[in-house]
Image (cartoon, rainbow, N blue to C red):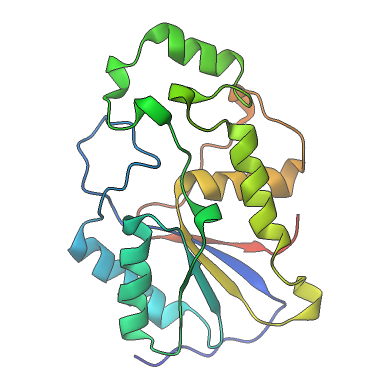
Length: 196
């Protein structure tokens, strides 16, 4: 499939969410390595393949639902060589992974809400730690003013929200009521500027 040539307007960051995962509704999953639906992954890759500009660098989360999309995309666009980056993984919910959200003690959910940035759900990863690793991934990109080359991250809703927060609020830590809820749908994307 031939890429669509688009005029360069400075390097952009494409934030692509994986296709719908094969997991029951209401289950807590972040670092849980669940696969994505193959047909939905293929459809998302087809849309991306006709939209991404030539020469874009592609990085993907090491979780299989993102790797599936990266490999499907490469099959359609052999000019794109996706590279894994563990910093693009979803939040690790520790012992909550794989549990139904309504099976997690209300007191634990309340404790997380009260100390939203520092609490480690299920003794997993805190939001502060996740923001730090996403910021490190952003800082590792060449500055947009030094390259006209776009970058795509095939990643998760949590990472995309982290980018939105970091670009809007920098190193400030969020409270639960401030956290951005908007994220692209399954297999969709947002386009952001490159810096924080």
